[in-house]
Image (cartoon, rainbow, N blue to C red; front, side, top):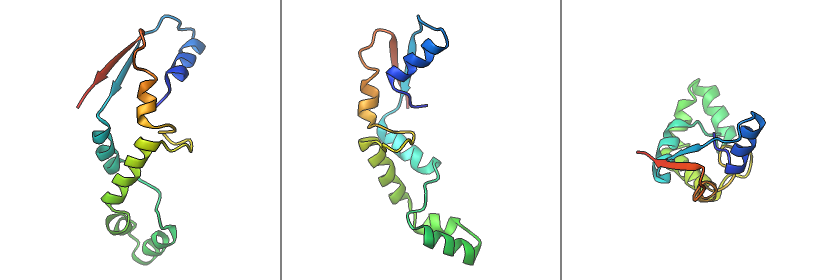
Length: 114
């Protein structure tokens, strides 16, 4: 989950954990964009077209292959990481702001992986 540093501390405190250490594992945001663009199913940008294709062909994947392309999904994820979504989705705030909340804290070990 993508909890802020403050939210993480609040959850630990609620569980009675007061001396915890946090391990923050992160990836290069470019890798996150590419991976998430393949993994997540995004809402159709043209819901009416999606419904029509699904109704006529019985195959919603046609819509995602030709209209809701990888380029579009990459654009959505890039904007989400750069700007945040602000709508309660998994990236409420920009990635840079989220990770900055953990940097420089004595109780946080930050690890990057690829």
